Length: 113
Image 1 (cartoon, rainbow, N blue to C red):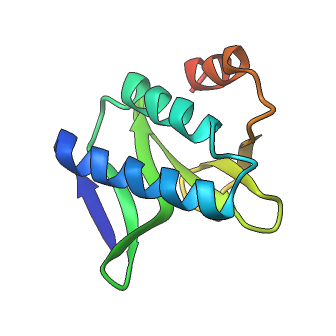
Image 2: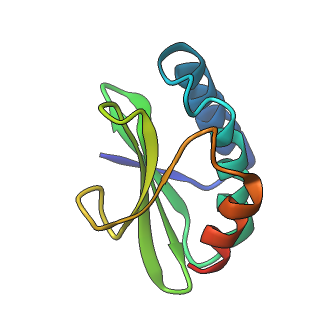
C-alpha cells in the first residue's frame, strides 16, 4: 500500500523515518539520503510523491514523477545503496547512490531525469 506525501508535515515524518533507519541500518547512505530528499523536492512537480507502507509504517520505497516519467527510489539491503529505478522497484537501475557519490553528481543525475 502507498501513502501520498501531500503536506510538509508528512514529508518531514517520512524523511525523519528514513534518516533514523539509515543511521541504524544503512550507514553507507545515511548522509546522501538527505541530499536525495532535497533533489526530490527540487524535481518532483508532476504528481504527489508516494511512499510504501508496511504494517502501518512508512518503508524505504518512494515513487515520484518527473516530466511525466515515474521513478522509484528504494534501499537495496544487499548492496547497501539507494537505487533510482525507472517506473517501479523492479525497473531498470538508473543510479546506485551511496555517501561516496558527490553531490554534484547527484545533481546531474536528477537534472537529467
